Length: 261
Image 1 (cartoon, rainbow, N blue to C red):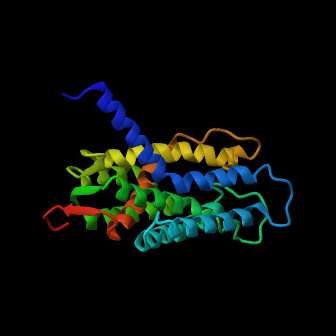
Image 2 (spheres, rainbow, N blue to C red):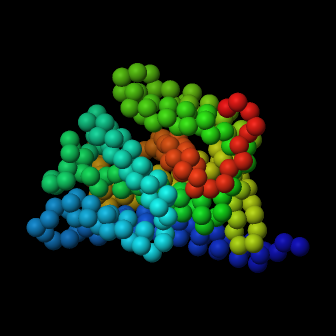
Image 3 (spheres, helix red, strand yellow):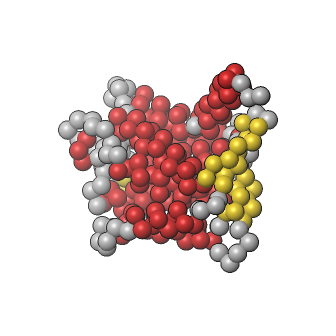
């Protein structure tokens, strides 16, 4: 018989595992927050945060948080994130108002670490929760994740098709389950639900990061305002890019659908 104390213990274990998964992201955002009120230094704040992010990445590798394969995935997320930032900042979606030596076309190089932190979370979760995918469709998911990424650029000039892509992702993930382990017990949830949950927590993290001065949206330049709820949906879509990278690199076990996907 399952008791309340059992579920309480499992919930605590789940929370502790999630905290371990978020270690890199929490350390990064905390470093950004601490750098804000520092007195004026010979090194620009954005440059200092870049050095801090590199130090965190090296530390994560040295202490065994990330494997060599995880590091490759995280580096890929960093580069994809920087490309994303270069376009979005140019289009005025958000900005980095402070000066820095390591700033290219208005984007500080540390900006890629914000996406690398998401990659670190996914890789860590795959290992710590012993994730396994059931009826996963790798090829169609790769195509749709690529389309999601490109749409975040192209919607500035072409019609925005994110809702159509969201519908296609629901179809592509229909019947796909994520199996995860907490202690000795295994659970499962629909893959689409995991995207929604991660998207929500990334939206919460984005509120924290903008409050800490990591970057600013146009309506935050005169003073901090909560990030639009629309960003919640955007993150729920964009997380598919990181997920496909991690799955393709073999971070976890997947049992694909036996069909020509």
